[in-house]
Image (cartoon, rainbow, N blue to C red; front, side, top):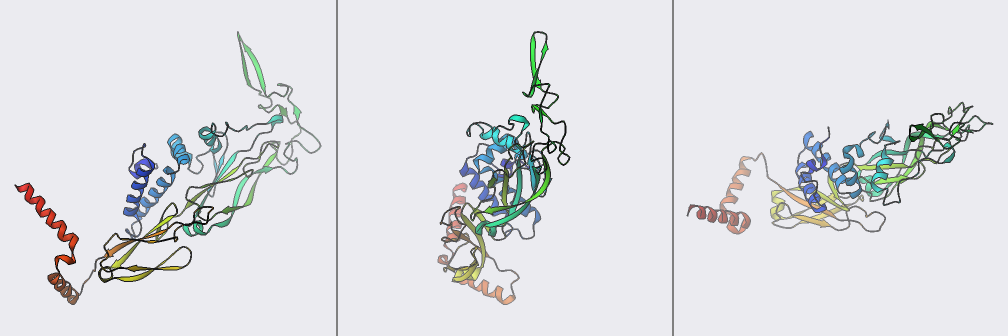
Length: 380
């Protein structure tokens, strides 16, 4: 069973956007693969944290999660799946959840059934995973979608060519029948036509009267540069074909961006943690970082740089969707302590420690001075 997303981030269900972002940044730094090389559990936690934040920071997805839990997003959780990242959205499926939450804002739910037994096809969902590099540059992807299409033999009518559906004799085309029970009159779906108002006496041999057949289609999906994890792309009319010539549903592409080896993303900004040697931090130096635009940027480390220092590379972050602007790249410095010292290296460090003054280490000197004053206060 999947963990509750709020529990994953360690926040209350009432947490606001600022609290969500703060919790995410703290946990992401803790479990980032760069800080936990070879740790499979840390990598798993990092992915869970990313998924939780990407869901809860989006007001629409958060509303869906609060109402339906993980079932709102899991493959097949919306009403049946075909595999390969693909899920259908029939009755009670994705389209119903979407309409439940946003129906009033958009003028109410859509009519799924039209006259003459024609029914609107179901909305479909396709899960697509892309790399951060692909999200940076954008791409045109080809996807294969197993779905139902209009039968080419009967043109969607469901009736054998040369014939046509007939008005249901039981309900006279209304799709409903009434039955009297004592003082009450009860209306129910017509048992003869199933509520369609028409019957087919001579069905099409290819679709067996459904007006649609299963087929795998290849579609082209344009993914714009700067797209974010969790974005939903709607392809109108590319969902399931309608029953007996009814209008087709829509296809929704749900995008997820794979965690990157070096970069963490926050909106249009990128963050990268870079380890440097103790001597480089003390004496100063330079290093190059590869950026997603295919170039290298040089970072100059000033003398006396401390751990946690951030350098900003303006415009080297992610493109802002459908604009000419870009975010920034933030380089955070980590200072690596030397390991496996030789005898001579140890002697040199010990000598350096002996000749060091308070001015060389003002932070540690000041900290322990304040700590001494604190202990003196307690002992008084």
